[in-house]
Amino acid sequence: MKSMAWVRIGLPVAIIVAGIIAAAASGFSEDGLLGGASIVGAGLAVWLLNFFFRVGVAGDRERDAEDRARQFYDEHGYWPDEQPPAPQSRADPHRHPDPAAHLDSPHGRRRRR
Image (cartoon, one colour):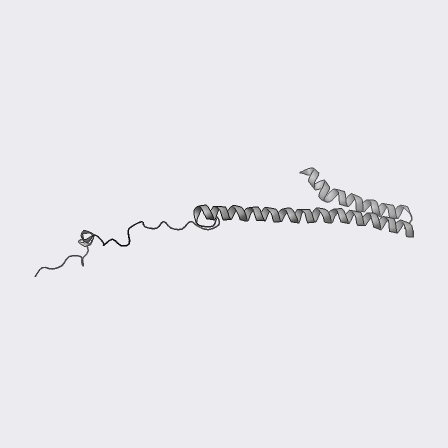
C-alpha cells in the first residue's frame, strides 16, 4: 500500500514542487510563471483524478455492503445491525386451551354444590 500513497500524495506534490522550481529557475519571468503554473495545474489535476477515483471506489464499497445487507435480510428476516426477533410460539392459535392446566390456579376449579 505504500506505492498507493505515493501515487495519491507523493506524485501530485512532486509535480507541484517541480512547477514552483521551474518558475523560480526562470527568475519568475512571464514565460517561467506560465510554465510553472501549467506544471502546478498538472499536479493538481493528478491529485483531483486520484480524489475522484477514491470517491467512486467508496461508492462501490457502500453499494456492495448494501447488497450484502439485503441478502442477509432475505435469508434471516431482519437487518444485520438489528437484534434478531424473539422466537414466536408455534402453538396452534385455533386449539382450545388444556382444561387441566388451570386446575392448579385458584380460579381453575369450580365448586360443587
